[in-house]
Image (cartoon, rainbow, N blue to C red; front, side, top):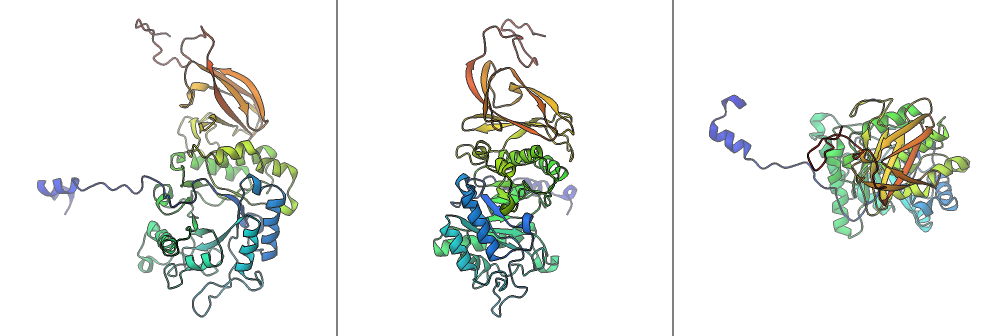
Length: 439
């Protein structure tokens, strides 16, 4: 029956069906209120991992002071398993790479005051063709239970080796719901906190619309790489979905590349700033045995981390002006440049120079919806850690480096000076009480 052949009664019945939104709030199961922070092995080591490397990295997170700033997860990525399951169908830790077993390793990680994360896949295999979890999520000893019994606190769940349609009979939501249900059922049965569930879903089928009811984070794009082109593209894609991040649910922009490749110091700062202020998880992905002071300076900026971990405001910054492009322009190489958002201590501004040369960056304060007209604001630079006086109406950041960033915290400093002209900082419909339009 087509729409045109519906009877009037049938049409009324059809349009009166209750509307059921996919999700309106994030899953709140007691964990993952804030974006998680820590280390992930993939970007630095890919498959070249073993228990000594994991434990050494965890110890460096402590000795370098990273754990004190909130980097508390030590996450093992792909390639940790044997190629074959056990006779009973269990996943098996690789005997060469992890001869002491996972329980011993996670116990040592926990003894350092850290949490442990593991990787699996929603398909037949992982992306590196190790055994996946499909059809084993809800077995008698489900893989969620096996991960928990091994002592893991977090599960990164990938999107490779998808079963044929006639086998899976599920869409993307259903595929990821299988493990979400297993995690929830295990927690309900044991009374223990659930695994933190990180969906590595690459932005397929718009996970920012539905993944928030399944887990705490969801990947929004394809994989990152250590160059400006990838960073700019990821920032651009996420600029249109900033609304999806809030407490207990976060857009995941992928593992940090700070310290990797040929990123300049300014590009690394822009990378870390965008990820932090857009409330993405912050996972270090560089070799900590060879980490430079410059890399640590970026990763350990407490004022930037404080925005990511704000316990009062969970929302992301968002663009208020795209800059060189018209507003709402999708441009993989030149994303939005002027951003703002709330924090518990004031309004945050991120000025991102997407050009290949230095540039002055000017904006009117009230372009941000979080700024009140007729007020002046004290301005603090969160990278130079300096107070930069008081801004009235507007602000100019001079000579922002190519691919560089300026981050400002603006705090109300009282009424602007009496008689400040023009009478309206933004002239659209600026009108006197006598009805005179001020041009």
